[in-house]
Length: 434
Image (tube, rainbow, N blue to C red):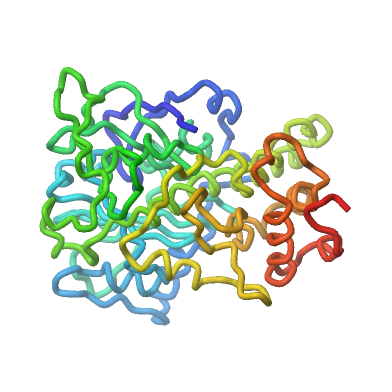
């Protein structure tokens, strides 16, 4: 699925493309603005319980230290302290950041991520950029001065960042997005009309405009590595480099921690951007309804939100992979190593990449603090909805791609690996509605 967006003239801080989202009417109407200054949310009150906020507290107390590398500054130490692997590196060359003058196909911006934190860096940039998921307060935004300092400190950057990170593309809550754009030879978005917000529902051929992509997507021609070749026809791309094993001919890769912009890492990041936003949206709307004593009026809306989160977690609307996809970095191996694994050695982090993204189509975000800290009524309803599908009670057309074997395997994995699973998950019946 693709959502349409338009560029924003100016903004301060963003990791995945700075745009004003006028977007498809469906998302804008379906996910209207949420008052994040409401007493039930208090987004402006920084709890400091997100990973970057916690690291800042450790820095100030002396429990942690950032080392300064002569070539890469604080970046390697930051990644180590936040538990982010270098093989997650993805590179974007479109000028869609507040540091856009320094971004081009010759000097792409690098992003690194794990389940909860994303770090952005630009050659000769002034700051490192951070988005960090708090278990209760959605995405938090920070920067870190790149200059060597006796006491490096993360600066929270809420107001500026919401220019881009509070929009239709983030479901109108402080969130995440990835955009695919038509990009000219200098990195400027060539098409001043709509760009596409991408996630795992987006057809592969519509993804990654303005991004470098290493790996192989078979015969599928994507927008990755491609630039517009005629300003009069900006959607006409030079796609000869759709599949690249190396970026060395594109720019000097020695300025980066890795020489890759891995296709599998990018697909994973696409999945988790909307997954993050959906969980926050369910959390906040449930809290608002309870605080305003509107629980009764909220029931139809609540059911819709739970259904949408469950469907996304189960990859119900995932775009089909028509040709096997192969990554070029170690990400395809290291990501599943995070587990957890069941008694048979299975994990929902294991990739398929032949016809779909994951071998067992259940989002790894079921293990996240964002899931575990949902309001009790929301978590209970989401658990029940997931179980209805996995047990075979729900067998509607939306879940037709989910076979009885898939459902059974996912249930078995969750029984062995997910803490706090409701007792009814432990029943023997699975997949067939028994």
